[in-house]
Image (cartoon, rainbow, N blue to C red):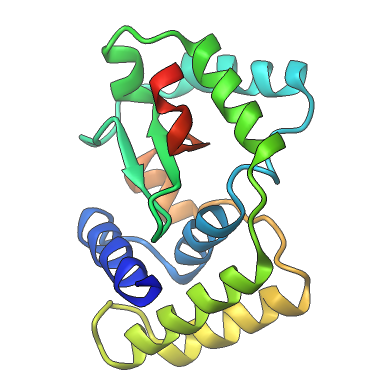
Length: 174
């Protein structure tokens, strides 16, 4: 189940974001396993971050309203451009984001499983990344207790990512 889910997610993202790099893959896996716990901070900070991103995001690629990013379907990225085009309320999204950070308990063990599966897919040529390079990068992140990373500069220039990571069960609230 996990293997098929990770494979589906990575193939989908590699197809949509061909400029994705190893660090961007790691960021996706980190969010899939740990949700938004790393990014919420306090409510005032999270609100300012969302307001600033909404004001500055500009145009970007076509994206769905949300992407399932965890193999179990529990965690999604809600893309801000289609979210605002649909006339949805940023305060509700902020609430879902903060609730996810407070309530979702991911696992570093699960993140390690995602990393192992990703390395296997790379080595088999099923996703377009160097398997040894990915494994080395992932090990270095594990050695540092899985720190948060930003998207790579090429990814940011190409795709201008603007999203919030939330628990899928909270989508009805947004």
